[in-house]
Amino acid sequence: MSAATTAKYLTRLAAQGAGWTARRTGAGLTRAVELALGDRDADRVVPPTGHTVWLTVLASAAMAFLAVFALAFALAVDQVAEGWSEELSRALTVRLPPGADDQLARTMEILSTTPGIASATQIDSTSQADLLEPWLGTGLDASSLPLPLLIDVQSDEGLDLRGLALRLHAEVPEAVLDDHATWRAPLIEAAAGLRAVGWLALALIAGTVAAIITLGAQSALAANAEAIRVLRLVGARDGFVIRAFTRRFTLRALAGAAAGTVLGGVGLYLLPAPGAVLPQGLALSGAGWLWLVLIPLLAGLVALLATKRATARALGRFE
Amino acid sequence: MIELRQAGYSYGRGATLSDLDLTLAPGSFHFLTGPSGAGKTTLLKLLYGELKPSSGAALLFGQDSRKVDRDGLARIRRKVGVVHQDCRFLDHLSVVDNVALPLQVTGRDPSAHATDLAQLLSWVGLSARAEARPPELSGGERQRAALARAVIMDPDVLLADEPTGNVDAEMSQRLLTLLTELNRMGKAVVVATHDMGLIRAAKPLVQARILRLAGGNLQAAGAEL
Image (cartoon, rainbow over all chains, first blue to last red; front, side, top):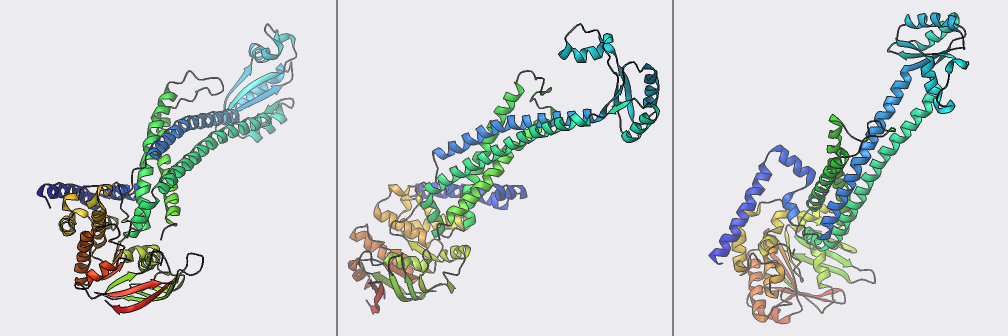
């Protein structure tokens, strides 16, 4: 053996060995990462897989980009739905017949002495005219119409709604207490539907990521069938082969998804002003941004599981 | 160590091999001969568990190959070195990395075996080609690299499938010498070959038995060279 060649590959082996030893004897965190992401030493034996590298990275990036907006949409709808539900559940209306001014004072007195009522405000004629404007147009003289007297009530914790209804019925028989239950239910139902659409979009994106990663892994596994056969023939256990492929595809998916998430986050930040349906728009605030961290992690997890499954199935073809 | 008991194998259209009885004892040396297509490679595959007998049994280190699980089969293969006819390298790895592959897949630190690797490459005459990629090697170099990989784990059994199929006479002699050296170290060696010249050349070097495969059966088993 020539001295130069010997020195060259012994040095390389020593360098590899130093890394190997460090990894084998390293901190628990290193071992945990290895367990989760596979073994770098195992990864080396997998031949380069050409275009599937970019397929996996690009697909993960694209899906993560879409996932950012789907997640923001789901969170925004969630917030709106919660707001609707909370606000409407606190809002009550007491209605008196037109001209029942004599009953108004008694009603206000009852409301002001009932525990759990935060405020009770009579809706004046101007506000009523504003409410009717979409149907009756501008310039309406509300006093010329037999409009009922309306009291806007905001409830608080501890309101006994049934008790209030019974008291009003007993003392002001013509007063009607409306808790908006009739039209609150469909609104909440609609919000829940929108919320479901948002989460369904996220689930579909996760499924698509899994499908693409699986296809990429299967393509790489098919291209490397001979390498897998060789590994088995020299004594590799299935776990070794699975770790080798798993690490590669999981890291690619993580890298792609991280890039896609960053791009999506920037896009989200630069979105124009919010609209009327989603008052806060799709913009995330404060801790909301932390949700985005989950996207690459989930993409990595999906890739990990998909690759493990694909590799295990491919190994079944070899003894 | 390895034993075939009435073992047979079929690829689907009639029996390829049938009623094979063979025992590989420590220090034994067998030549497996027969025309192309006789089933020499199939028989070798039965001996290291890549194929499982359709009938009879293959006992690999005391374990029935049809009953051993996949991890168990991997452990058995670490005790059986195989030189495949087409060598079966990972072309993206260097020669030394290919030779060290069995160490790596078993979780051993290749650097801890650097001296062994250096000596092994020197023994097969490939020290200067350690960093070459397999496609850059000649036929003889590939066979010698495959032999080095086959013995890196210090196996009890060495199986070689047409190891001299693509090499010249001088290289054949060199490979034969290496195989007989391994046999003298106590390893059971089986060499599948249709090269009768190789068998004749082995006569002064080793006490070998010739097994002839024909018609799916082992014939003249036990005949001394």
